[in-house]
Length: 340
Image 1 (cartoon, rainbow, N blue to C red):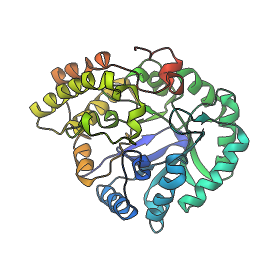
Image 2 (image 1 turned 90 degrees about the vertical axis):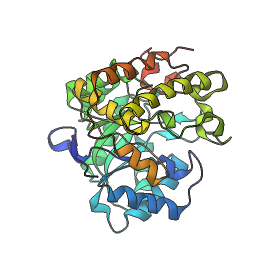
Image 3 (image 1 turned 60 degrees about the vertical axis):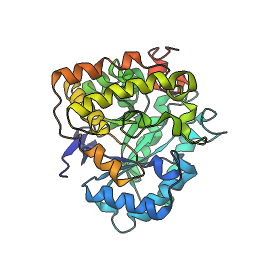
């Protein structure tokens, strides 16, 4: 599987990386347990598929995802564009966390992340969530200081609104914005993606297969009790049966095109991004090599117009918001999410 390269950002703050990245939240048990040996084998598989973009965060497993990546990268750090994040304090778990973006916290956390990752710098450092109690100018100013110090090559934002992105970019050039985007979650198309296109900022879609909904293997009856998806409205008892029926429509389109549903979901993203004028590197997370290969099949597929139209109609039918708290994501703060 030859994997093309893309550019995130512009000028001296740009990053050249693969058009598909690996999201390493899964390595910390978010969707079920995975041992270190299996995690390293999976990362080897992803690397063999020419993926050069690895994404993690200090909050994933209380640093466990970063630690595992550090083991993997010990003798091959230069082969990869490495991204991590700061800005969420654990609190009591999903739904009880706090966004924190003050300068002192950012300066403290980068050193802890670098130690776990076993490196002297990260290529892309995101503010994981915008802190409502700290001006974004302060947060981005602190991130910019880390660029000057050589600990970070470029900076990004996660789940920032279009207005917040504009303010941040005025302080220090933003290389990438990371937010949820998929066939089922499209609020970023209203303000966030047009802002990225205008400012030349790359976009990194997370959960591009809807936390597993947009795959052939998803079974709503098999979610473990400790699976984090139990906290998200799409997966609640009152919504999941309806949303699984929409998944069946995605699978039908994929079957007609002789593609896996996950690959179709990625193909839709690339085609939609091209129409909106943004460069993207989605970061799906999986725990199996077979699932990864299904995803990668969608990187360079051109979908026919009727398939795009059929898929485009689905987001408006999804029940529930994409987040447990609309204020936690850009679309909620832009007034685009609440649907019940």
